[in-house]
Length: 251
Image (tube, rainbow, N blue to C red; front, side, top):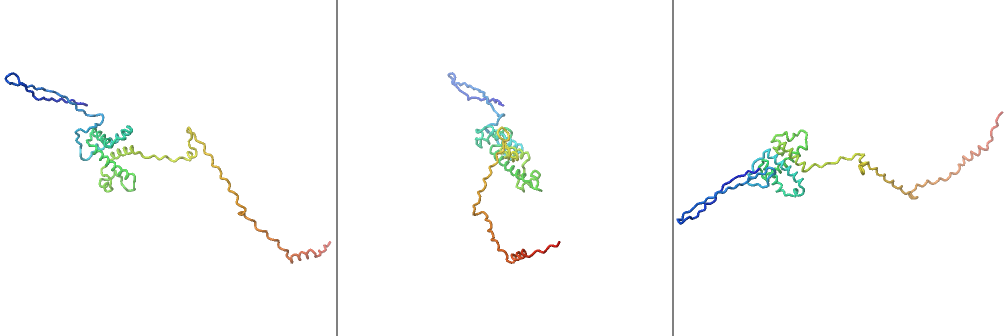
């Protein structure tokens, strides 16, 4: 919106001599000028003008406005390409200040930067504490302020602030996705051209047989034993048995 403001200015008095008696005539000129006071409503302003920044502790509303400003700044940089990504940190935080100022958070870019660093530090402490549950240990959201201080945790981090920070951080640094392990069928039959199952690879060739061992390493048969000479007692007994007469067979 533009509100015209009218101002009236009176120019200096001009004196001129008249007649022979030395009398003077006075002429007064009045001029009216109009100036325009312009306030940006659609986009954050880029000039600070005569801004009076608020000091003291941040309210919950101011904190949520700052988180929203950082979220929109990240989205703006992602959509803007290299031109927006290559902007200096000072220009980016100036944009955050202008957004906060237009939303009712009267803070400077340095105040916004310092507050954001403190918010990220507190968020990381609470996230790490909550990610390691221990039996019998209370949750951060169930503890009193003095219990949080004893555990070196931020004493006054609101849950809605934590959740808003969690959304912004996950957008800036999404968690890495780990692909699930392939099933046995996928390992045996991976997809080929056109999505069809590729034929299984041929089996590897059999290894060649080992070479025969040399003759010197082959087992040799034991040497044959020489025949033993006939026993003299047994030979004579056999001879006597063969020469003895057979008994007569009775009819």
